[in-house]
Image (cartoon, rainbow, N blue to C red):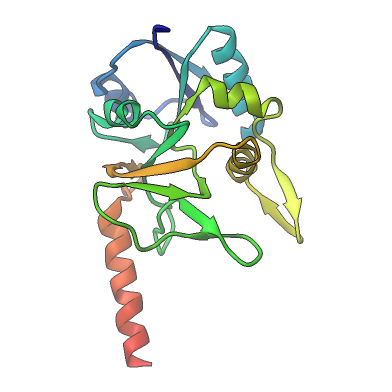
Length: 210
């Protein structure tokens, strides 16, 4: 059996890495040999591609994409490793109202947010953000370069994470989100599931009044 080797891949667009992120990283349980790579290249898709290339060169069996503006509980990585899926992400939420979950299904023309999900279960999705997502080496090898790329479609910009997820599906792999692995988007206010639930409840109440 191949020994597991993890690379934590962190793109960082700012100057200083947030203290909250570093504390989350230091407190994270790491079940195998591991190292952290940080890339400050711009744009973001370039940083992610450079991180993947470095991780593969370092013989990583798993790459954890972890954005520097996200924090997760200490058992999150262990949970995702135990799921043993090609691609498995944690559940986190957009920074802006209505604080929607960063996991998606294909819509009529584009991806749509999943707003109804079971608690503490593995949910199959069509796309997930890279805020806290574990990817096996075999996926990255089969997808090939470029793993991430900003694109244009129907007059709108398509993020590098959607590009990656579409390439993953084309390569024959499934994508999952563990809804029991819940993180927060950090900033002046840390955004988590409570913000999303409050926003969605307000929306539903307004629809009832209409």
